[in-house]
Image (cartoon, rainbow, N blue to C red):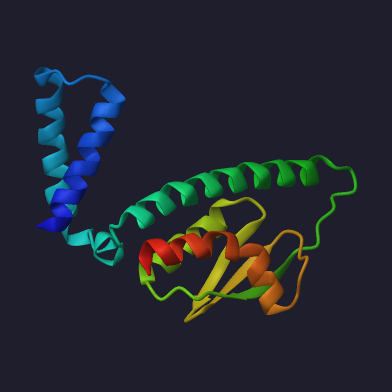
Length: 162
């Protein structure tokens, strides 16, 4: 029930932000839609069970999103530069990186964050190791590659998901 309430609350906040009004004729359909979506998703809402709801973790969630979007922008510019360069400066390869994250959902978020940033793609996950296809391999050592690819996201996900 707690998870349904959280999903409902998040959906209602998004609804109000998108509509920019508190009029009942707008809020009631939003509440009905949010309730239906919350009830349909209740079986799949394990993501909130692992998440810590503390002021620090909520702040780190917003910081994580900011870091992710900045990294997404930088990665897009880097890949664009590489593609448009006549010499095509790439050195592709698959590197193994390690994570300290214990939560399954946090690992999934980390893998998706790596995949969504251009130039890197999560190919496989085995326990605490991720195998990443990297467009320009800078480091072959696990520790250095982990520091370069994983660390920027991992420290925030550790606080959010423990």
